[in-house]
Image 1: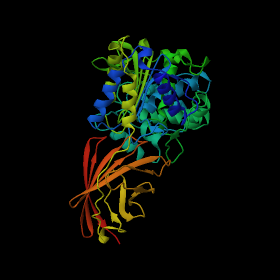
Image 2: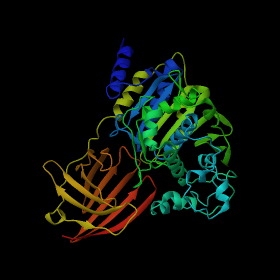
Image 3: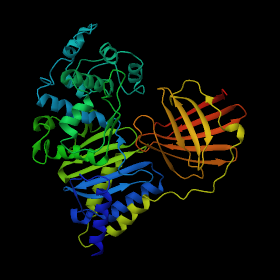
Image 4: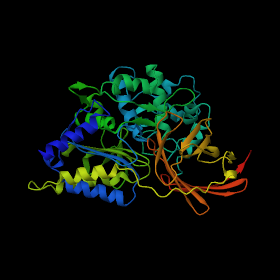
Amino acid sequence: MKKYLLLVLLNCAITCYCQKIPWKIAEPEAQGMSSLTLANGIRELQQAGTNIHSLLIIRNNHVVLDAAFYPYRQQYAHDMASVTKSVLSLLIGIAIDNGFIRSEQDPVINYFPGHTIKNSVLKNLAIKDLVNMASGFQCSWANGEKELEQMQDQADWAGFMLDLPFSSKPGEKFSYCSGNFYLLAEILQRATKMKSHDFARKYLFNVLQFGKTYWDENKKGVNHGWGDLYLLPYDMAKIGSLLLQEGKWNGKQVVSAGWIQKIKPLYYIKGTESYGYGWWLDSESPNEIQAMGRGGQRMFVLKDKNVIIVTTGGGFDAGEMDNLVENAIAAYKPDENHYAELLQRVKQIQMPDTGSNHENNFSPGMLNKTFRLEKNDLEITAFRFEKGSKDYYLILDLEDGGKQKLAMGMGNRYVISREHLFGLPVALRSSWQKDKLHVEYNSLSGINLYRFTFVFDNDSVDFKADDITNKRKISLKGRATN
């Protein structure tokens, strides 16, 4: 009876924020997994201070673990970063299935009739080469994806990509280039006369009964095909279910089985790591398929074990989560059950932090004063501090013209505010250590975790940012303008 009540409570906790979860809740032991192994894995993540936001595990069409790490909550749509590429690959397949695109063999240049060809090699570039990261463009991840940044500085993003020199023949070898997937997004829009997001809603998201979705776009109204698609973790798991069921959902063929079957190791990267049709694969474990995104966004499909794993985070290595599941399966013992311990661990990681005593070291000269910054990779142009009735606020002016007013969570307690782009949650917690103000900026629906340090000196501020997600440190000087 106790176990039954625990299952009911967990099921209620999930369905209260999303009424369209298509899977039942089950004890891991009922699906041949060890709750103790999963509980220990969660404990290790928590003790290591890992900035994981969520971990969702589904086996045999049953949810065996739904863990949200405070202050993240399951109802928050999350930036899936480059997992977006894998979703866009499916959209290209659906567009072909529905006759919007004739074939993945179509020459890319056919979709840009007004473009002047400067290199005849461009005529040989096909849609499938973009999907396989085998365009041949002189474009890679070796230099921090410099070409992606350069593309975004242009008025015509597609034109920039199509004018890139070639370092190899199209289709010849793999080279990671996010601009390939921007071209795919623009091709999809040109072919369907719909934005990629609108096409996705009509032909994929609505069919799978997704919750709220968001997808950033450029000034031309073309969605960022390489990233910036926000999905609920459960909805990303539905994408995984399509792979397990040869493109079907509730008996309906959403993506053709032929397109799903193309997802196999085609381009070898290093060791056994491979790539094919927008997905990451292992040449020695063909039953494992992954969608991978920066900062810990990951979706694993373990076909032979009927498992889907979805992780979100703000700067952690998600590559071991499949091992955690494999270990939980290997450790299963029919005569042992630690489900109550697992539920207790899941409850613990959802508890708010205790914080510390609130020290107010703000002086009047630090407040209501705008500090300007030189151009920087954080895309922050200025900041200021204000005192509210219950908390202090950090106001950020951003390069795109946006402004974020964020409760600081003084006393080192997370407080939720909203970002300016889609109104999604951001959590800050702050504290003084002598003359230094420390602010942790956790973009709960995003992939970035920053630790800011401010040191005030009359009309200037030394501003340091430790970018945890991208493993870099930035030092800036803020100067008062009023």
